[in-house]
Length: 164
Image (cartoon, rainbow, N blue to C red):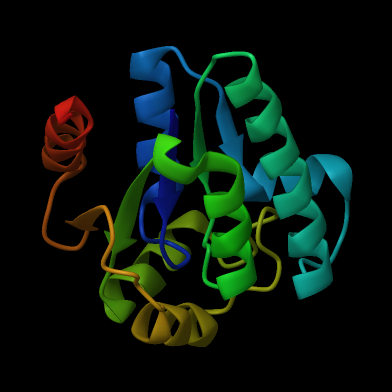
């Protein structure tokens, strides 16, 4: 099974994905880490992200073919990225959408430092816009990371993953 965390920047998806991967003993495939590994020093353009998605999805395909699972985290804000994920995972995918208020996303970016090497393209205004305009699918589990503590999010994720 693939456990997939989606949402806008600074919504908590990487933090939650890393903890779920640790707790379940699964590999954690992050789009930002994959991009940095495949394209060190890249500007984080759409083309760069497409390369990272292809690399991350290839690794996920190999893990699924071997009977293993993984935890993925990426924005998945483009229809073609979601379609590719559906193609490789199909019914073996558990989707978790991280919702965040624009003001909280901007505050989280400030806490990280405005020059996040993993995301050199982000500014407070861009993070606010991406959080405001994110195309949530309504599928899977919706987590409001603005209102819920990380512990409460993890409890809801555990309950969701325990479902059939």
